[in-house]
Amino acid sequence: MSEWDRFMDLLEAGKRPRGLSDVAIGARLSLYQGAESIRAAEMYWVRPAMAEAAMDASTDIPFFNPAVERPAPHGVMAFERPLPPVEPGSDAQPADHYAPGWAPTAQPVDLITWWSFEGSQVFLMWRRDSKTSHGPFEPSTALVVPETKIVEFDQFAQPGHRALLAMIGSAWVMMQTPTVAERRAVTPSGRPTERGRQDKLPTDVTLVDLRSLRHASTQTSETETGRTYTHRFVVRGHWKQVAHGPGRAERRPAWIASYVKGPPDAPFRHTEKVMVWRR
Image (cartoon, rainbow, N blue to C red; front, side, top):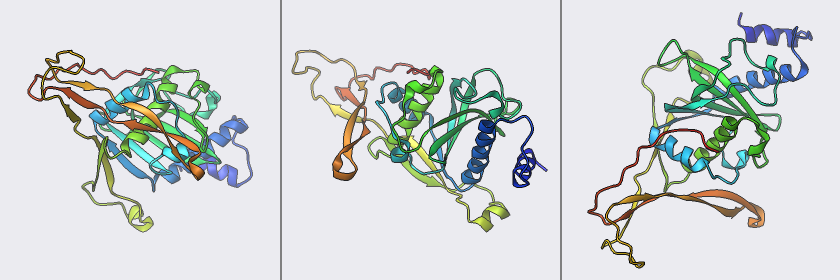
């Protein structure tokens, strides 16, 4: 019998698990419900270019509302290349909220799961087992925000937690913007499990990649301002607020895609990108 089964058996028998506070019990119930929700969640595989673009955009995303921006109520977002390390744990929860064995040092993020629980949006970050390069995954960081309210980044004391939430909001918006992201469904190889077939669980994974940048061609290297361009370069995208909702009285963030500028035959000015949390 697993630890979860023993925990749930105690609660169903009306007994209190020893050594756990009310907050910790509620947190574990949330995780249990989340595990059940994730079994039927939408699955996304994010390519490196898309992850880098979302991290860059996250540095100045003004806000996001989980209930409005999430691509699915329950989801799994896996990254082809790990995100930078982030502090484990959660600012608002006691130590016994977490499963035994969680590492005390910052860990890379390979996978993000999310689900709804009693009016909250719960995010659980996972890392690959340090003993293997492909899995299994271990939980490292849990963050909880109101489900239907604008996320307040400043409520989290850890800079990495603020940056991670901003990145999630940016990724959600950008992956649903056709001019920014290219999405296609792929079916993993292998046979589905018997339980998966019985429960009719989803098997397709949505692959999310960054679209090729649009080129704003300048037919000559001379601009209206008299400046001469000798290279092509990327003009970074930006956020704007758009109206939505009843009477278009509410606002939501929209990402205006980056583009390439400069003479079409000029060499491209490439700068090496380093993935690092900034917020």
